[in-house]
Length: 235
Image 1 (cartoon, rainbow, N blue to C red):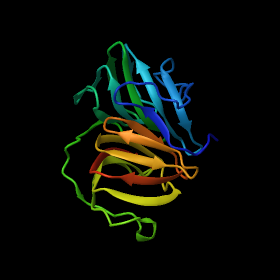
Image 2: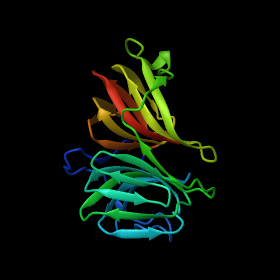
Image 3: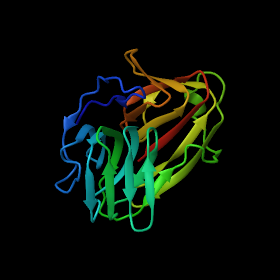
């Protein structure tokens, strides 16, 4: 298994990241075989990385559930029921079993978190960065450094079979001690900045528009000095 650490997938400004990627399809049915670059592939069926694409794909049965955040270019997702236009910074979920056409302009790149599952959840879900949120649980008091933050969230997509939840979360500034990350999590910052600190003192600063993946169990602390709003995918 790869090392448990915070993995920076893509910067908002398109600058190079040091995260190692492997060109690797998620399965024999993966439509993005030539452009799939994987940074994380766990034994629980969760994968994360980037996709580079620039063509049209007609897919009868999408082979997994994929959360995508566009970092360059433009993607159009079309089913019989709906059409989603995804530009820079836009996020969406393609459910397992969806029949769709994907039109990616040349030079398109998106960060992804994917889940392999036998149970179909067909359909497209657009993630609204301005979604109205409701109060949610704060970090445990014993790990907080300083005041308790005010946190809110909203799940936009849920898969009961795998417990995958995708949505939007926000918080007032706070700091907490390091601990093993409770879940696999893709984070895309809509607003704000946060430092994710490792036990050895190193840190990954995640700024507005950046996307990172934190594997379950990866040790990291959190330090934000201003309001943060993010898209999340957790399992």
